[in-house]
Length: 374
Image (cartoon, rainbow, N blue to C red; front, side, top):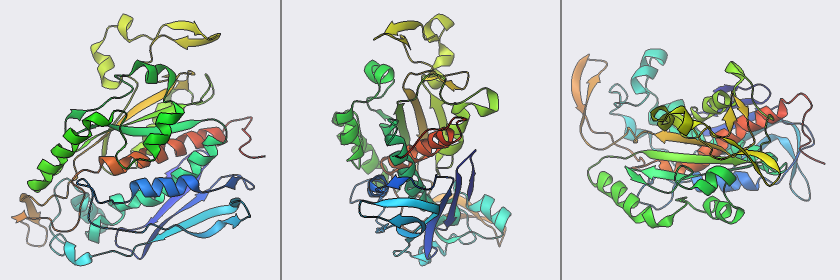
């Protein structure tokens, strides 16, 4: 699967139950120095843990550098197209014998069968497993953005109808972003919340759904700081919202992306929705941030804020109606295998990855360029 970015050349390869999955990244300037610390952090947060929300499938997700990164005394230096893979070691194709000709409702199975003539084990290239190489690319992108003062941080804003704190409820985050201490805490958590007090209620919603053989969805917010006014984006098809949404929609199960006030802005009058200009600390700013840091497709200097909506995991143990594609008759399906009862906690680094890649591509495509290394 290839990303159609302006400058970055990104290809994610493999399948859920293939021997390996990986990512090829071209377009990063030769000579850029990397520690890969963000890659390790992203993979750690994305990795299945012993939580009520998480699949029992455990994968080490140890990245193997195949090319493009030369080892140095302090880390790595880019010397060409980067190719990094991950070995799949805990596969169980036998769990998917029942779904070889019986598609799982709302999964990619049926559409893939029509397109490819088969339903791949574990969802194949449509599986959430493919977000592991996405996190490798995203970790590299975020490390490069960190080096020029652009910070990207995501967190859980809702699960199963339980709302947590967000940029929509915390004015200080909408206007000033997330402070470094909070950001570090979120990036160290497998269940990243601005306000930890709602976690027990969220976990109970997940636990109740899992007990019924069911699943729940939720939302992940992302806040980006350090992008100057007029720096990124342009009008219409070159707009920053479109570039970021294109990247975020690559994450399986994302069914909606909104910026700033998002769909809520449709309920407002113009006088309420408009972000009035003010002078703050000697600089032009806005009194509110309903636009999410973007006007006319161009960054306006305020924190960039967005929200991604994740559907409930479609692979559930509860009985569902489907069809036998060989017999062309309706049947009943009980999905087997190991699946998350809620993918939202593990999706947080995936959102950071997708957003970081989109922004890095805009940075690399700037006419005057930006120095990413000494």
